[in-house]
Image (cartoon, rainbow, N blue to C red; front, side, top):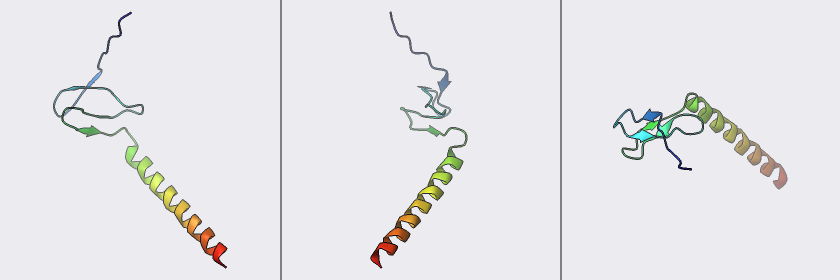
Amino acid sequence: MVATVTYSRYCAHCGTPVSEGPEGGYVCGACFHVVEPLGADEARKARRVERAAMVAEAARLRAMQEY
């Protein structure tokens, strides 16, 4: 059996065939053009907010242990 790679998407910048990521979007291997999946910006912001809350909670717990 022979595996055949078919490309359903091409880089919008240079036309090179690209493979989509698991959530959509891609990074072109030829010109490094990036297309992010839908909702990536909102997800990134949500992760930053969540991480900031975790850091603040860890700092609060450390401060409680000092007393």
